[in-house]
Every structure is written in C-alpha cells, then in structure tokens.
Length: 122
Image (tube, rainbow, N blue to C red; front, top):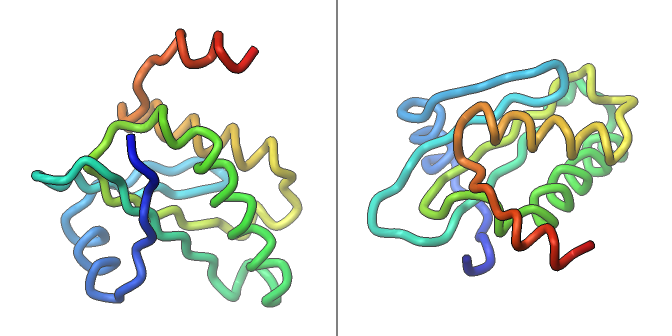
C-alpha cells in the first residue's frame, strides 16, 4: 500500500464521525470509514486538552502516528481513520499505544494477516 495521508479538514473529520463506526478501549477510540475508489488511507489524530498540556498532547500524537506508520502496510486500504487519545493514555508508553491501536484494528477487522511480511522483519 502507498503511504497514508493525513486527515486535516474539519469537514473530513465530521464526515468520519457521522458516517464511520467507532471502536474503543481504555487508551484509544478508533473511528473507521471505508471510502470507495481509493487505495490509500487517511489518518487523523485527535488529543483533547483534557489529556494534558500541549507537550503531553503532542507527545501522544507522535506515539500514535509512529505506531500507525510501523504497521501501515497491515491495514486494509481505502479507509479514513480517526484516532482519539483518551485521558487515561497520558502515562502510556509507546508499546501500550501500539498494542491499543493494533487491538482496535483487529476488532474493527481492518488489519490483514501478513505473516510473510512479519517473517521478513524478524
């Protein structure tokens, strides 16, 4: 799959919130909307001020973005994704965020099984 793009416009976020489905765990909430006619994914990350100050929010945004980037080729193409970071994630490390994102992806059935891809990385 080609590199993912970012969701940036408020209108795009609103469409995903209204038409997409959501799946949540303690750390993250994932909104997913399938888009016909597109192979790439677009991802938006939202961290509320309730989570912490700007340094904390930006740090969590970077953790989510990196978690997604490392596993980008495992996700099905043609999706608009929004990841909301919950206040409980404030003290989370990278591996907790990564596990939470992959768990939500599996529950939403948007992660493909790429056993061959994993073998190449080992």
